[in-house]
Image 1 (cartoon, helix red, strand yellow):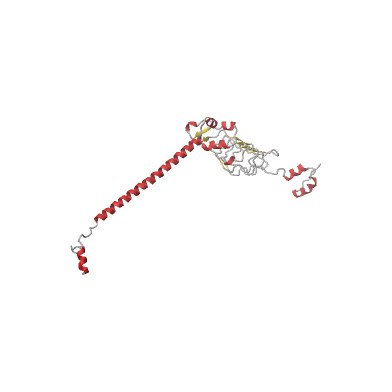
Image 2 (cartoon, rainbow, N blue to C red):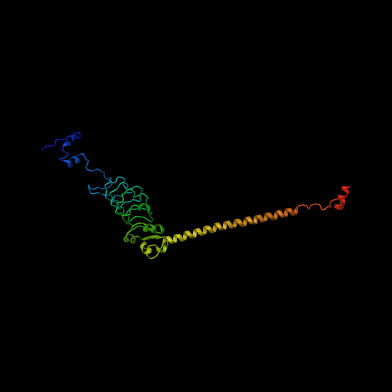
Length: 269
């Protein structure tokens, strides 16, 4: 059979063949995929998996297909997860961000995922501290947090207590540094199980700071009162000395030395 080359507008005549040859028709029109794949990634058709790992990426692609179920972004050079980085990925179940250089996660980084995430791998990054806000909606996700240079303090302790983490996840968190230097290099789970409370130490420091502040204010008030009293005393002494320096009134008797009764009799006659 000999094929005749036809210009693209002539393809409109193939419309009646759609029920018979749907796959060939969509292949010809180039409409085989509803959602384009990011240029730096691979998206096997109808798999729901997007491979963006080992691509030397420095930021998260913004055009991830919305029907993605598994997203591999591991082994890149990503340092920051911005707000809304995965917005619209309602079907996402696994998010792999391991072996990057992530130091910071924005409060709304995972907003819009739909709550169906089951695995979030953040292992092998540069996370030292982490707030609770980005993970507030990830109540069912398993977190991988090992191989990060964690700084163990009250905020990290509160985060571990707030998140629904399994024992394996907590046991893999090692304190690269700590609020108390003697605890560096030990696992956070071991420290908490042994009775270490970083928040208690922070509370003591806060109380000490409050006491010191109150003492300073008390000292200032007492100093002002003493200064005010002494100043008033000095002014009183100066006033008394001024009064003493004034000339005394005349002591000449009334009536040129005559008795007062005698003067009255003379004036009355």
